[in-house]
Image (cartoon, rainbow, N blue to C red; front, side, top):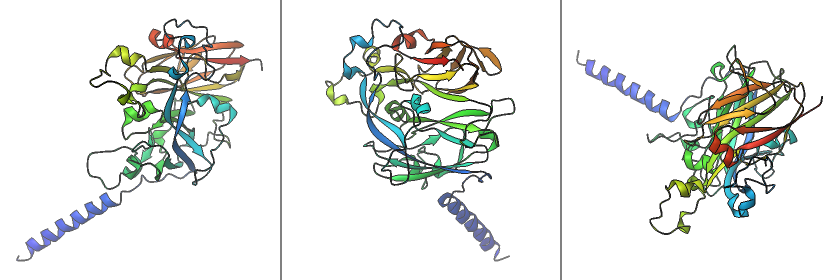
Length: 365
């Protein structure tokens, strides 16, 4: 069989060519049948104020760190946040609806049903060398993962979008990205930058994704069985880990890891604001209210989320405290019955004293 070796070599060559083609042209996840949603989102630099009202509005005593004892510089920092635009020119910001002002530092809300496809046209308007958008829960091809690997892949441009550049991510929403049979009709995922995750999340680059069960939403994308929604991120921002923290201001060999020094730059926030400075979250007595909860990525982002005056259903149990670990997400349904203004806060003592609290109001129907 003088040509046997040739046949084997040809087969090996064909296999290698097929492998190279697959690497060069990665296949997107098989797109489910559903609607296509397009978002125009940029990473923008802003001066962020953790306490825009300038005072503690909750009544919780924080003697060591009360706002009245701080200078304005202690609560304002240069940050990068995700913002939504009207189209791909990225010239006009899309106004945030009044009912979503409480999102604060979070990026725009992305919505989809199971079976839909999400496209995000992303632009890096910052001076950060790279940033990206990486979604939790959804399905994506390698080029739309938004995360970098040290593997010499040729399809990872979406993992490191440079200043001034634009990249389009395509994500699909399969069944495994949506609610299970016993879950609420909608669940929460998050998205964030993933080139240098610690720096980029501490800089402010994170946002929410709500996925609803197939065929369960109103024309505006909200769940049919819900009257009002709130998204809250319990996030400790460590400004010493931000892309914008200027270490050159300090002497050589300064001990940045010193816990006492680091504590000065920790901001204990709900949606990027402290001590009740988040815009008021208002609902009517008896409404079907859904709370989407998430925690950020610092090692201390372990939270006991507590509502005063009300109870919720979460994980098939009635409670008034929902526990979160770093980068975890949860859903809690509330039927508010007690009229008044109430406290929402983290029950971890250090976090509560640090300002991780907000207010919500229940008004008569």
